[in-house]
Amino acid sequence: MSTNNKTRRDFLKLSALGAGVGMLPAASGLAAPSILNKPIVISTWNFGMAANVEAWKVLSANGRALDAVEAGARVPEADPKETSVGLGGLPDRDGHVTLDACIMDEHGNCGSVAYLEHIVHPISVARKVMEKTPHVMLVGDGALQFALANGFKKEKLLTKESEKAWKDWTKKSEYKPIANIENHDTIGIVALDASGNLSGACTTSGMAYKMRGRVGDSPIIGAGLYVDNEIGAATSTGVGEEVIRIVGCHLVVELMRQGNSPQDACRLAVERILQKNPARAKEVQVGFLALNKNGEYGAYCLQKGFTYAVHDASGNKLFDSKSNF
Image (cartoon, rainbow, N blue to C red; front, top):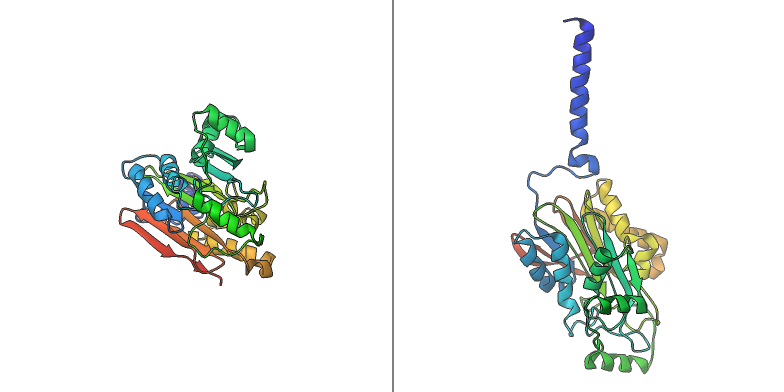
């Protein structure tokens, strides 16, 4: 064999090896794990435990992550005792319960509703927007009209308990966002199914006693929720204005793409908020929750007190997030 042919053959071998290395998960910022932790579902706050139970029914039967996150999100939406999501949600300062939600699947398809009234399950309306329209977001009366046309029932969302709390608030009408201290707020839920696909959902009744027409981060793809099936998924909770300012969940996913663990990605996003306005950050709560393609998860928040639930084959567990303050 000539020297030139041997050199050429060695070059081709090295080129093929290089191409193979380029296809490993590490090329996407993820280390190749020895064991993939799937299926798995993670949810924000204490009520994420109940949401996870319903989601796990889908995942443990080899169901799709999209179906799991919708099923999980519907649990707190239908619970009148949960005052920050769906039925029983605390109203705006004029006494109207308005809901926001979004959903995103493994293919990058997404749907969203904002400023929606009278519908218990905005997450399911968001999915209909994704699957039955050419749009991503419908709002207000248009979202309600679409929901009713697709079989959703118009219902009263303001419960006696929430109405009483609102009337008590009107005695002083102090309007300012505060750090959450009741271990519930928006529910964000992301899952990795047995097929290795990711999906996410986010649903809320928004900030209590907000200005009429206010919409936070929860229905905004890239802010309250983002899914990239090559890398991971993230969701957020807390004061949405702060999350919108940094396009928070897209940022978390991009930080994972750069090689950061889910927890480090969440921490860096929280620190971005802190850097932009330290004084304001000390007065509000924001938390991020993330899951990568390997089934690794993490969370981080501004203020102590953010909890999150994790359900995998080992069971359903509640954790306290690390925080800046």
